[in-house]
Amino acid sequence: MLAVPAFRAAQKAAGCLFCEAKKRDGYHHTLTVWVDKQSMMAYRSSPVHRKTMKVFAQIAQGKVCGYEANSIPTWQEALLTFDTEARVV
Image 1 (cartoon, rainbow, N blue to C red):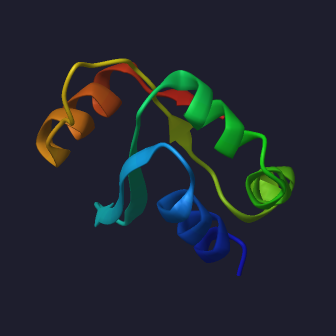
Image 2 (tube, rainbow, N blue to C red; image 1 turned 90 degrees about the vertical axis):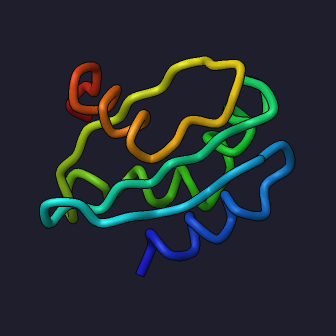
């Protein structure tokens, strides 16, 4: 109910170059790529994202992983980094 609007908002957010979701081993993963950190932070502080994060702990469990790169990673690259560097939220 909250994740879909937040996902759609990310897809349309200024500075978002890539936004896609996949399910792996029963867990949903979202990969977003931004023009710059400022664009990402603007989305992160948007009302739709804040509303979703307020209830996240009550409706889900998860990890996050963020890093800077010079190109858009493949899903395989992103998930490898996630597996080794993600932190629990």
